[in-house]
Length: 139
Ligand code: CMP
Image (cartoon, rainbow, N blue to C red; front, side, top):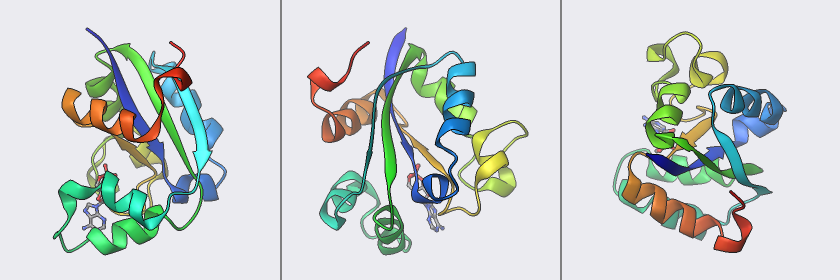
């Protein structure tokens, strides 16, 4: 089915000027960028977005990192967009990511891993709503 997923290009990616390189991989994979903006999150926005990880040992580090610089939040649309993008991203840990994936190419560590993508339809709906008004998404 045609789906939408929430993508984030993280501060390690924007800091190394990789927005265009990653967007090229996204578009080559057949996904369409139907919304996109460059922002800096507040700590409260990061904590809300990652609420499911509250209590994990890496939660504070994750929220600090995600507010440490500009991020690019995007809505990607296409056939099976959620799974397609997760496959393109590769494993969370770049040491385990397959050749050709975004994280194999660009990620620096489990935390500084360049990109985020929603993991389910429910997450995508929630994550898109947290970042975009419906009028900002032009399919
Ligand atoms: P993301 O898809 O953005 O969702 C949760 C994030 O937590 C995940 O990507 C990782 O970047 C981050 N994360 C997971 N495990 C660790 C870890 N051990 N140390 C730091 N960050 C982590």
